[in-house]
Image (tube, rainbow, N blue to C red; front, top):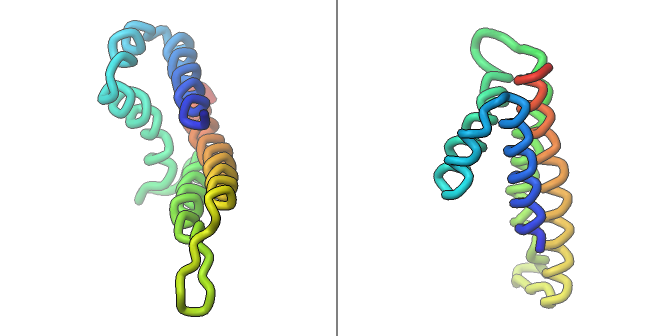
Length: 127
């Protein structure tokens, strides 16, 4: 369910950003295979985030770029805490607890990480 929501969100955003740019042919050609998603959606829209911090100085996207990196780091390292530790022996969570923690972790990470990506990539092109 959450992956479906994520893919629909990516699909909608990519389709509309190519409409705003007047380049719908790129979307029609590249949205049918995975490498097109990685190359034309994530990589091209990440250029603004990558240029947000460079050796030549900061720009208006630096805050969003650093926020994206920090949130992504927190979200990615949060997986280490999905197992609770009791003294020196690992004690696994119950299946229900693990699913709830995973759901909360995935949802919050998706909202905060994708929000920074969305704002930075859009404001870099249109702002």
